[in-house]
Length: 197
Image (tube, rainbow, N blue to C red):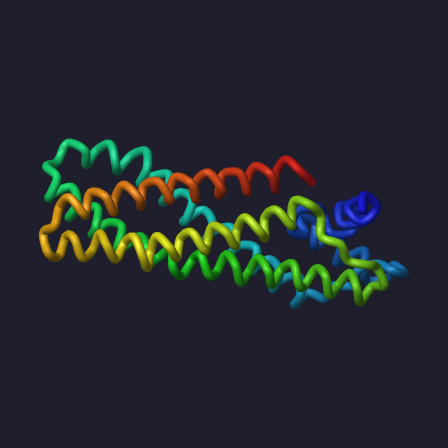
């Protein structure tokens, strides 16, 4: 296992093919090297960019909501606060629905491309521990988000629509709890992928 991780670091540059361009250059003539053409390199770069930008929007949005928006809206009366949060979260959750799926699709697509290249070059593919962690925790984050979006937010939306403020406050409290858990997972994923290679 350790030998395969070192191969990723040497040939593919650790997390996500960081040095994919140098792997492409080495692959042109080296026996047993991973062979990447320019289109594959460009596609990988695009996938990684979309993946990272989606994660930045998602985790950054959760950070903003928890530590900047929430303290500011506490100054408002309960009905005003709930109506504002319902509106803001509705807009944010529409964006996160798209970017959470992009994070999953691009992440698994990149893993698949690396696996395919390794196997085609005659090297066995075993994912590093940090990639396993990223894949499992990322999938868990998406599952938690869909619970927030389609169960808890629906309760908040209905409570605001029918002016049932006590139920709205309960729903918003549960949303805040699960967003905090997802924010912690997102930060942990970033830390693990940057620190463990």
